[in-house]
Image (cartoon, rainbow, N blue to C red; front, side, top):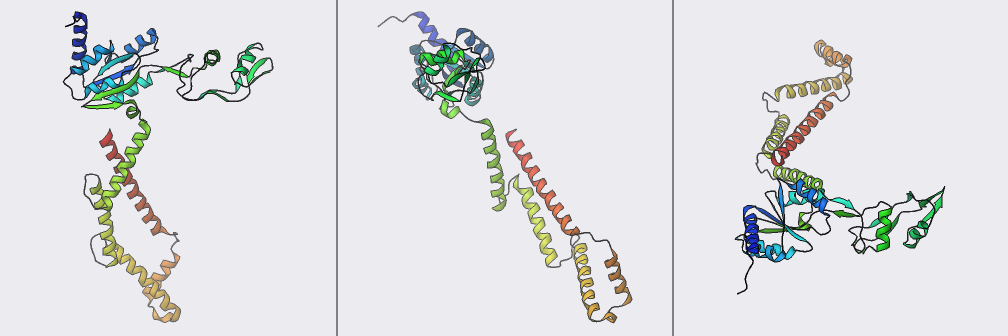
Length: 335
């Protein structure tokens, strides 16, 4: 049996302790990160997460010996200069913090473009000279104008996924175009027996919140239409039922504390309308009191569509109340 160095045993034991002591364990690639920037990233993560670099075989051994179910699958995502990350944060928050901490970096020969690299149209700081030919050689349209070298149009110099040549990398740096990013590249994270890969962890917070808000509104609408009583839908259902019952009572001329004044006002208006029709046929058909009422009605200042406007205002207020209730409910659900 081969002798195993004591430091390796202690290293595996230390890694196991970190794995078992944190609910979330991540695998990251630290390749191409300069030492000063790596040190700064460690400082930024202090108190939130711990980054531990070690030999791949020792990290694999520590994962294999962990009692956590499925955590050994993290080994499948080790690449480049692999490291383990230990944290109490959920994987999505960890991923966002690591992505936000990335900084622009110059291109290197042989690197793969993470996106289309575009050299923008406009002036440069270069004076006329051999650099004009160098720009044109790598496909950047340029000319001399007013004593300076000018790039005449936007030019995609390297497409996403293509390798960056040495000449292009050098020119991009001279143009102060930094298309790469330097930072901790989280490949996968483990939590509650589940492995979350980087493509799953990549989410748009604004779109996600918008989707949740739309889903909430649609759920409220469905529960109201299906008459399903919940904490959020019950006030809306009661309000709708009250409106329908009031409308039914008015149409059926059922006198209640809420309908009496409305029914009497309607009857009064119908009486005046009938009296008006009778007066056209026979002026003597109306008594003096009724003539006075009609005269008073005629001389009152006209208020166009007053009742309709009031009803519309009431309906608008109800709609605003519903929207405010829905917004309050969303705030309660999602903070």
